[in-house]
Length: 293
Image 1: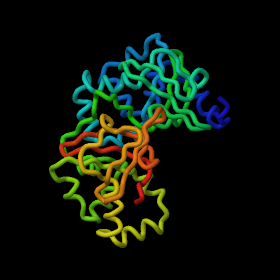
Image 2: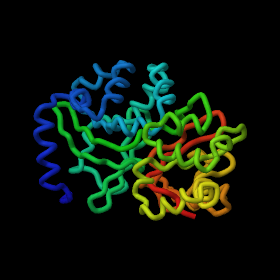
Image 3: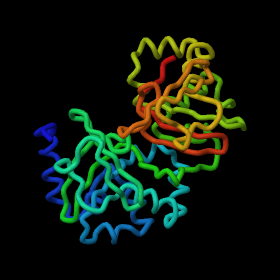
């Protein structure tokens, strides 16, 4: 592996020297307060401070925020159930560092499912989530920082409320929430019946050219509504029924095509960073770019 920059090493080495265990890395990180609270609530801090070694894939606060505050509250309310299972899905027994993994390699986690690495140039992913910081070495293992929560197949994240409740309570979907309101689609995404929404984050929308955003917002019930409806499909398209090459018609009328492989799942080539946020009227997937019809 030769893609580590001197800057990244300069960041990791002092951090790793200060940390004694994988838990210390989480506790001492200002970007992992939600993960810290979850590990403590699930009573896993003692286990992960043990001899190990362990490999921990550590979602940032922003990654947790993407699944919505209601979902986080529901998980913390059941610390020995779904929360524990989700956290164990982020831990591997042994050291899975960049010195001993390669593209396509899968390692079993403590939940009983696989973590699959995708490596392309300087980009590293695990189950489709981007690894933003690699190989924080500790006395009892290694930590990798990731930008999404890895939800096990058998543990869907459920929230009480609608698709719009997920969007409106998510701190990383404030722009999407505003655009939906401008387009007059709030009621439609709050209605009964089953839908799937692919929800671009604030950063994803901010990446659009300013003139494109201006053009869309100048025609909220026309062009903007069409783009937003392109992000929704009728029915529940969860990871249980998404397959490689599957094509589904959107509410706008155009098609959405999925690719599913070891690198993760994409829709029209766009990465799905968080899957299967189930609601009373469907499911939400978080995506890292805007789908343009």
